[in-house]
Length: 204
Image 1 (spheres, helix red, strand yellow):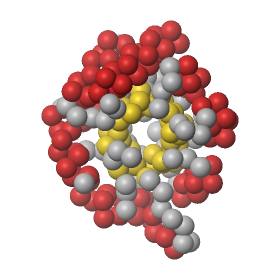
Image 2 (tube, one colour):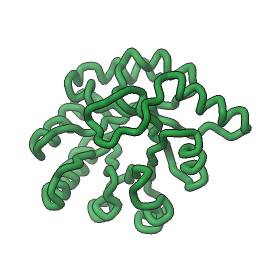
Image 3 (cartoon, helix red, strand yellow):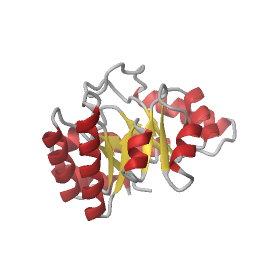
Image 4 (cartoon, helix red, strand yellow):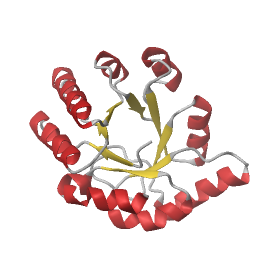
């Protein structure tokens, strides 16, 4: 599984598509399509375009929230928030071969996601981020450390956890020793896609 996820950003469909294409051009191989305030038709068109682009680049295409869209366009999987459709029902719709990721904010959330059989967990936010409405309580590096320590003390195998929420390149040197598998990045990659290779090197 890729250690760097790009979460798409943009106010319009053309902005979103351009940002996705640029990230792919610069080496991103995992895209999560996330466009919260889109009309259903526009979102569907963006997801179709993103899937086509990801196929061209040999990249993974994950759809945020929308299980039915993921099924219709045969995306590689879906990412579910804590208040979205259940992992069980998404798995029933998408089938066993698709990737299902789930958001978590606390140790209890992580345990729930493990029990549900998520393929990976997006744990955060690390810090305040303007790209997400209804932001969960900020974890900071200490929050990640405490959650990983709790799992280890309970002898629970640590799943593939991605740090999310205002992540920058310089955070990786602090996140890796804690036991974080990878990072999901939106803003910094959108604003400076030339950093993608540096992200990938830092995560190795």
